[in-house]
Length: 265
Image 1 (tube, rainbow, N blue to C red):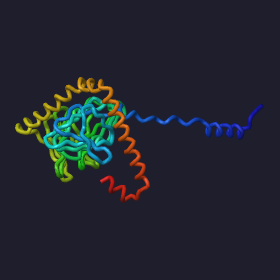
Image 2 (cartoon, rainbow, N blue to C red):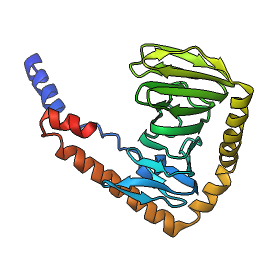
Image 3 (tube, rainbow, N blue to C red):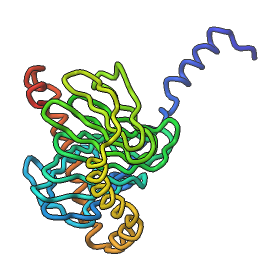
Image 4 (cartoon, one colour):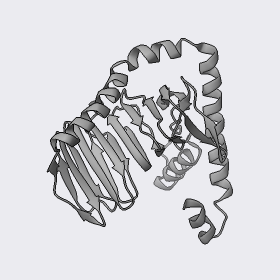
């Protein structure tokens, strides 16, 4: 029996209405893209529900976690993509987002104060690795560099490779090459300068320690991952912090705009 075009159109519409929806892409498990605490020298802390807690070796940190170091202290983290971060004395940073280094990976570290050394593994062409400050952005694909935040400026010093330094509005980016330093200060991009002998020596000493931690990361990670009881505890804590942040974010959705802006500050 021949069906009328109108009847066939009705059947097609009915099928579309009751067709199963495409499955939502499940977010990666928190521990799959977590940063791992490899070394703590002195005192280092992470923020949990508004309170600062001491960091322990093997501790897992995820997107949204904030960390800080005390006077004469440093913190070494290894990221899921194999890169390393060393947070210097009296420094504070937020792990805005963390990726695994593959296609579409997105890692953003916000340096709030102090100094950060980063040793970034080679990334996919469309992957992102950035260190952001209040007034600048340092974007890389695979290099070794240092970012320091002053009162009104951001300084980037490069050990190997090239870093693109730009303003926070991303209107202009300029390259910083090996053993060069470039500053973004008072809304101005200053010219790149070659390190003086004295600065190069001080930078080399800082970098030697950071590089030592980076070279040891595979063995240290292996030993820490073998401590199953501690790792299970850190995974549980990591998931709880993420759940708390998501709940807090939901609770602020219905707040007036001016209150949301105050919270961001």
